[in-house]
Amino acid sequence: MNQLCKMGLPAIALFMAAACNEYEPLAFHAVKPESVVLQEDIDSYDALKSYIDRSVHNQFKLGGATSLSSYVQKGVMYRLMNRNFDEITLGYAMKHGAVVQADGSLILSDVAGFLAMANAAALSVYGHTLCWHVNQNAAYLNKLIEPTVIPGTAESGGGGDAGYAYTFTNQSAVNFWEAQVAYDLPNLENNQEYVLKFAVKATEAGTIRAEVQSTSDYSSNSFGTFAVSPAWHEYEFTTTTTKGDRNRLVISFGDYVGTVYIDNVSLTVKNSASNLIANGDFESGTDQGWAGWGNGSTRGVSAYGEGFGGVGDQIIEKTPEEKKEILTTALETWIAGMMEVAKDHVHAWDVVNEPMSDWPAPYQLKTGLGKTDMASDEFYWQDYLGADYAVVAFKLAEQYGKPGDLLFINDYGLESSLDKCKGLIEYAKYIESQGARVDGIGTQMHISTSNDKERIAEMFELLAATGKLIKISELDIGVGVPTAQATEQDYQAQAEMYRYVVEKYFELIPPAQRYGITVWSPLDSPQGSSWRAGEPIGLWTEGYVRKPAYAAFAEALTGQ
Image 1: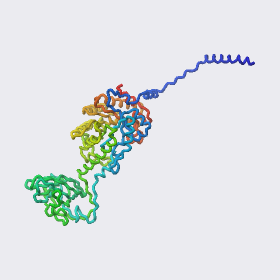
Image 2: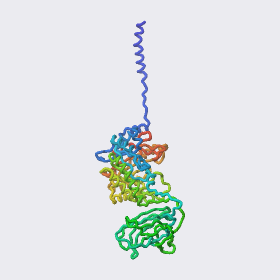
Image 3: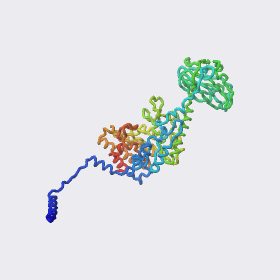
Image 4: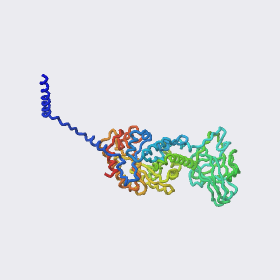
């Protein structure tokens, strides 16, 4: 029986083998969806910066922008930045509003830590931004130039102690010299410095002026113009006489409409206490020694002291000159402090950001004057420092930075408004005409697939003609709909627009002028973001998946 069993096992094996030969296993083949194949193709691309031919573009920097917190956490964004880009720009952390505190001090420890981390990763940093009108500590800056308030008393009157002030009124505007008040003086010494002090208020805001004059020929030495308003101001001016027959103090107000009150007037030789205005404090309500005249009956002058009741706090507005000086110092403190921490790591700076007006005058600077919806972080340096605010900023950046630092001026919308582009170019020329150095121009290019490609090319041609370094400083491209509604066709159109912008940059900007391109939003923007919320603007999705735009961007970098 055991022998039979032994003989049966080979027979079973032979039967099984025959069965296998008779029934071949079914072949199994799954076809990958086209979308998977396309994604695998995109994922097969190398890191973006590897596509730059460094033998041709040895100074070109491919940049990405992110937040300080996203980078220093050393998560996926940290690795994405280090792997794909040469340079990093922080969206907010290096701006005035992030660094300057309520008391004017600068907290830069976070910036210093970030700079050290980027340096360790061999990632250069583009400084953004030294002088802008947004993301400022506007509360601190406005406090610096607010009026001085001197507490008053119920018995205090006017600018003096007894409730009287000299008044003069003009009812319609003419030339400034056509309505004046004057005080006769003994002949002043020639080539002597005189000091004029007074307190003044008025029914309306405006400007009037003072001078010492010669009655023989009406020549004069001016103390300059000064602002008046419904609040009391105290002023002190100096002038040096150029003739020995100056014998009249004249206040001219023909181009001002309203009533002016003036008190506590003194005119002295510098460093002397002897007042040449005998009744400058109108304690008794008299006006002895003063005379006034106007050109026409509607511009008469009331030559009488006016008594009026007590007042509250005395509010002394700072003059435009004082505000300019205070804010220039504040700008210097800010730039010097940032440079002290950053100059060993940052060698290219967005010095002045978005200076040009959008409409209706793109050749003019932006202004906050008359703006009724001012944000809490808005502060327009140019409204106090004038057109030279950028001159000051560029000179300070050069002074406190390192030799060889590259200094840029930057604006948006240049591809949509060629007039704005031309205005920015002219402003850069003006800055240099005033002795500052502008190395490059940045064009932000927050655009969409619907942008006019011909205008983009024209913008590059205009910028190239300056001979300066040209940087695409903040590139991102929308598709006209939110991420949730974007189609495959939208993403292909986005990829082609990214390709076009990069290719045109390399085609129209000469090699020596190509500073680089910065992708402002590498990822699609999430809902609730402060920047293009819910738009699919990046080269990666919110989940760090490469998009068709990534492949197009890489191919454009290498020219394939």
